[in-house]
Length: 404
Ligand SMILES: *Cc1c(COP(=O)(O)O)cnc(C)c1O
Image: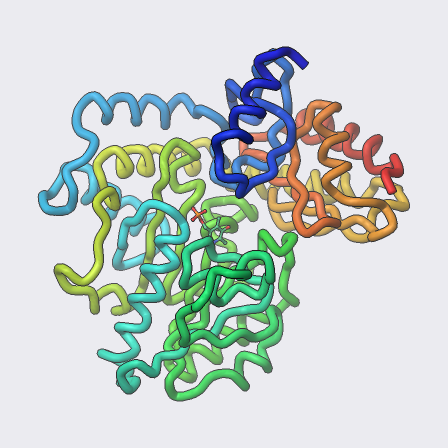
């Protein structure tokens, strides 16, 4: 390790809040599925910044849109109109079939905005008594890090010593439609759920779950809010993960890949009157909907479609999953995934997933462990068959090692 590598890591540790525990690599450049560290070593990025860099690192067309827009106009605030927001609305609405759009920045902000909007809808449209709105969420959810959101997390570490928390949330098991039916009351305004639980370790619900969920929500006038911040925009091999289930959410949350990793851009999409309840002055964001964000998001959506990234995610995801299933290693408990949202769960006796991720780093692959025993694999959607095979070879040799 050169002095500069030690220095970056040590300096971060000295000055930074220690809210992350990064793998020991200092990255300085990225292109497509590849990233390079400060010493020039190349790695295949199998995390894609938690699926934000789906279009590949530094995509030239998104870069060009960003630079061009940055030269013209970056921020107006919503106190004035700008000449990018309307175009962003039009294009994202056409692509997703949504009627209304609320632009925000981070994913957590989109979730918070949806919570505010469905509560308001509950009081003003559904007729829930003031202050009584209930939102149902799932155990092992991940929706972000703000106070309201961590308040309904079931992960002890996520919540500990951050309370008191906001009331009005009810937690049920994921993948259990009967539990949802049981939990709905006349005051339930929404069911907030991830189509596939990403941070929980790529947990795919049983077939038919979302059909039942959709029926229950419709029958009880409950808004189905799908958090597609990680699953959306091609990651699972469809534009939206809901398409695998043949359903439509009432409210869809997007973030992460909405900017191709260039800039924080998120959005709340609704195909009903949930967003229609917001009036001037009732919600906002200084940066939300700014022209730079809109130009970047427009380019990020355009390349996703024009360059066939969604179809590629389906094709390469199937190849990757099949390849992982073919690896014969005692360390592997289960392999699962949909599109390029994949995970290898290790047997508890195999040792911590973190150790395997460090070994993979030595072989030129950056992947991230989650929940001790699971290695998550989510490369950019531009990955080729040769690159998938290259990754599989290295995964096979690493997973047959024993780090217990
Ligand atoms: C990442 C993520 C979020 C939060 O997004 P941030 O931009 O980190 O605030 C919310 N929901 C899901 C499903 C996510 O994966």
